[in-house]
Image 1 (tube, rainbow, N blue to C red):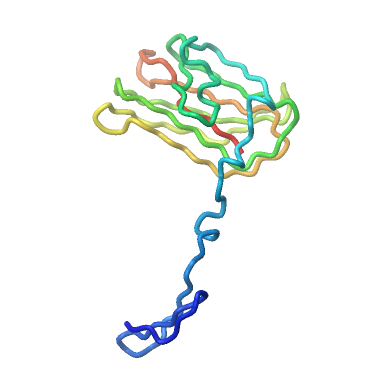
Image 2 (cartoon, rainbow, N blue to C red):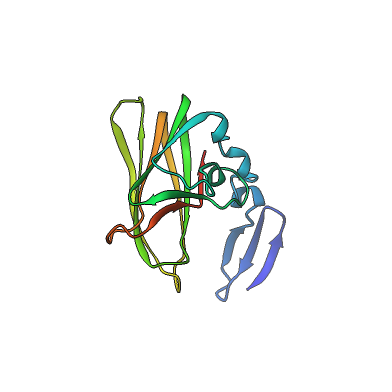
Length: 178
């Protein structure tokens, strides 16, 4: 192919059959529609309160909610755990990112993400997901959900850390909401 005309908007190329190919160079703002995407995350600690079924004092929930590289949250006991974000005022949510890490034991985890409009209202499931961690293979799970939920009062994450007999402790590396 050889170039027959060039400007910043488009380039026309001749192929082997002397046909013109129409091509446009994509600008950086179109490649990443959310430059500086950190600005879109909700400062969740200042707009909500939280409920957890248990918490290791060395791995508090707030270390999984912030922007920095904290140790993440860890339950204080084995078995199924629940984390709830209860918003001060109902919110519209567009994106939820969950990150889990496990590099010590092989286990299959299941989590369920649900939401409700009212404190004692009906919960609606967003997703139920299973993931198998393996120290010699898959040690990280990152889920990035593009959603459109209006009037969310409660966001609830239930983690069953191991589908086998209760031999694992639930962990959460990062939870971001936009």
